[in-house]
Length: 425
Ligand SMILES: C[S@@+](CC[C@H](N)C(=O)[O-])C[C@H]1O[C@@H](n2cnc3c(N)ncnc32)[C@H](O)[C@@H]1O
Image 1 (cartoon, protein in one colour):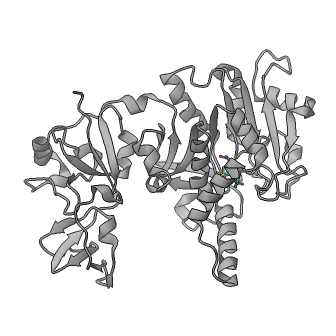
Image 2 (tube, rainbow, N blue to C red; image 1 turned 90 degrees about the vertical axis):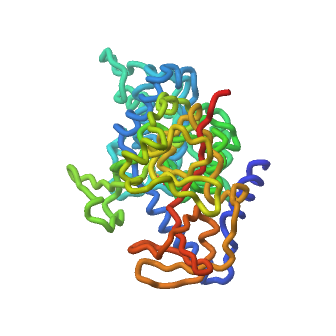
Image 3 (tube, rainbow, N blue to C red; image 1 turned 120 degrees about the vertical axis):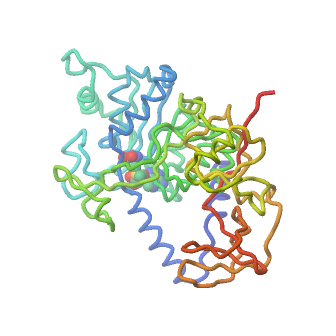
């Protein structure tokens, strides 16, 4: 009940009630589209690479732990496959995996070929939980691997349990009471959750005080439900972030850009940039110290600072602008605005995070009247500058959106986080 109330509160904050029948219909269509877009599947190699980075830092990260993959079809998810195949190596106590009623058969290599009847439809029960508390050499071939898991699941029908859901949530929904009971049992949640429910998903993990390792989009960093967790060191980025990751998708998955599409051995893949792991498990990368030059050295050698005698200062925050983490001056004691990609290099022993540019407590000036001029010269009245780190410039910049406030020109670098060096006293 407590949980239902908390989740209802989050949901009511996130979604405005529909004002008309049309609005309600549009929202339904939008949700259906978002749900379709959520159907992309993580490759085994990406999961292996990330999990192994934590083992390098602490081989016992998963030892004696109950791992829960709560957005994963146990018969085809690579999260299930990875943790089942490495159950003994990782020293797991239990692996719980639940599939979602609304999820189609992905068509990934399934542990049970007969599971996929070729019509993309789920057999009944549509949602189920598979719980493994040991993985043994079932086929007696001297090795313990995923084929043993397959055999075990064939022999032990009791290891799977149908998930019914309730009036509010379908079976296997991470918010359903059955899944919450399983969540309560879990020590570490590992998955790639639906991006369209990311805020709610993370709020639930934080609310239940769980350890987690999950995939999300870089934009989630600035969500008002996520950034405070980052600032308070309750959530940070994992190891293998950014770049391009390829996800398996169904044949009818809509991919507009040709270069983001590939088909290998009849399997369709979709590439996404800016994909990040979000976690609260410790790893070695976040303890590596970033090597930096002094301010004077940066002004002399750094490409973005060529021709400048000083770093730009913001007009509305008491901070300097640093447009790449590489140009953070090692000897500057004040606040600095850095792009969100800095978080991939963030070492909490080296830096302190003060806020995101929307943090008004750090804000020193407001602009009541402002006109935005876009790259086509189009003018509009906006309030955006108050949500950004503003830099005053002497003339209207060429080929860049700018703002006019009382005959003065401003530019606003994209999404800045305000940080400073952490000096040990
Ligand atoms: C981005 S996909 C990733 C699937 C799988 N974790 C993987 O990485 O291969 C997210 C999955 O979550 C499922 N899903 C959507 N809404 C859900 C919910 N409310 N509860 C649990 N799973 C959900 C979707 O059907 C989809 O298969």
